[in-house]
Image 1 (tube, rainbow, N blue to C red):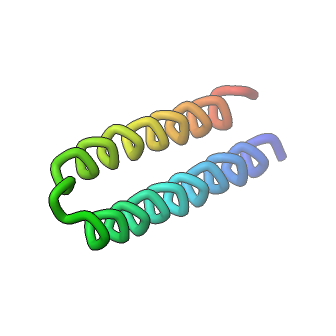
Image 2 (spheres, one colour):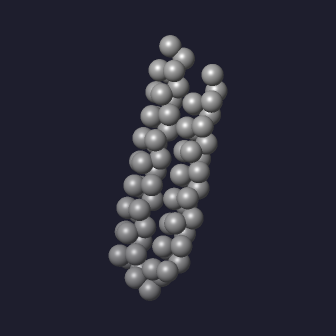
Length: 68
């Protein structure tokens, strides 16, 4: 039973990361479309934010799988 709950927690973490990175990318594209002269700054901030979201998701997966 514990393994299935851990798998559910890891799956939810992955879904959350996917949604978060999708929102970051979508909003970055909107920002670039509105202000194309700031493309470099927007892309840099987008990559940093996506890395932070992915790191938090990876932490969630590790906690879900090792927290037996």
